[in-house]
Image (cartoon, rainbow, N blue to C red):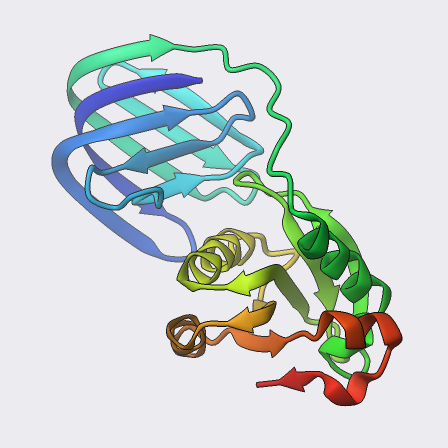
Amino acid sequence: MRLVIAYCQVDYVGRLTAHLPLAKRLLLVKADGSVSIHADDRAYKPLNWMSPPCTLTEKENFWLVVNKAGEELRITIDEIEHDSMHELGHDPGLVKDGVEAHLQILLAEHVETLGSGYRLVRREFPTAIGPVDLMCRDAEGASVAVEVKRRGDIDGVEQLTRYLELLNRDPLLAPVSGVFAAQQIKPQARTLASDRGIRCLTLDYDTLRGLDSGELKLF
């Protein structure tokens, strides 16, 4: 992993255009080839990024990052304060607790719980920022990303939002909608999900194991 702290401006050119004016930022280049730009006030969410596969070309005071779709991140560097490389090694990934992991398996086995005509594409669908619990197709063939939790809170909605933002950059998947599935969903999380166009599915663990779909509630 490469960490660069620099005064820079960033321009994204693709299906949309976006501009970040000159400021001090963290540029993060991962071993998978992804490049992301971070500020000090956005927690874990980057200001902009390019997912792999992409190519990074460096010239004096200028980085050009291009993905397979021809979209570009143009990073103009005014001054570099820090530039370092770090080897992190293999990461075992997030380990879900037993109930949460089993919920994911049960929902994958009975994906029709999400709606009539749904079919599973893959469990643990890989992305540059972590695996999506379930990637599905609805009855019309549109992509649906599903995040499964035991207790659904705002952090879970934010996690699914990040996945959706990334997945919707892939023309082979877009448009991708989201479903937030949990045994319990906090009111604040439900409100945030609704505001972002994400459906909430409340799961009953015992009922799902018994396949009594009448007890499942889809909002």
